[in-house]
Image (cartoon, rainbow, N blue to C red; front, side):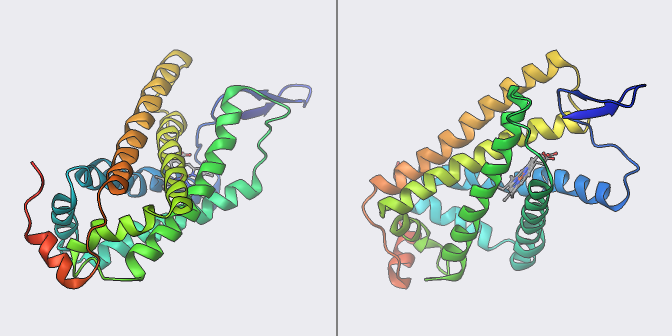
Length: 249
Ligand code: HEM
């Protein structure tokens, strides 16, 4: 919400998304960095993770194993993970909690749609954070090492989503992250002046909403595939067998 003082000194509040303006020192830079990291690299990573990697899981365990092997084989993969994913997410999340803590949602005083969306942006970010921490910890730092045994990837995810409470957690985390990113693209474009004017912003909101449905639809499709396929191996020799097998036609 944008606000300014009129000639009598009274604060006037304009509905809409306030643009990010220059000249506010270090907090302006940190805020801009928060906004940018939401798109690149964090958003770009989420896009890849759901629409490319998870989408291949719909093709079955062997196809998924090949995708994970490709990602694990990227040059300097650990540096990519640390500097391209973990640190940017950590920055965006911690600064996001700081913005949340400092800000006022105004849902009661100004109950226009944008303000509800603004609040939802904070809650979906918080839920996504809990989910991301859990998912990274269990998939990357516990159990069989998927960089070494990509063939165990399908089975390792299955072991989580076969447990109903965890499956629900996965569904909620996925929907929260998808919403946060899709609406975040709209926020980003409004704040940086990429899409301006009421009409254009409304039309672009519909595009972002459609993107949310695509993102969460593909993600839910992959979760359904993990849950409906019989448990795949999670041990070293079973993983090798999955890697050697052909994907289902
Ligand atoms: C799935 C990972 C995430 C992605 C892809 C993502 C992406 C984005 C994007 C694109 C924006 C819009 C940028 C802008 O406001 O200019 C945004 C905003 C925001 N994000 Fe995230 N984010 C993620 C995780 C988080 C987490 C874990 C938090 C922690 C609470 C968070 C908190 C926020 C907040 C508070 C805003 C709104 C900033 C504002 O209104 O000025 N985000 N995010």
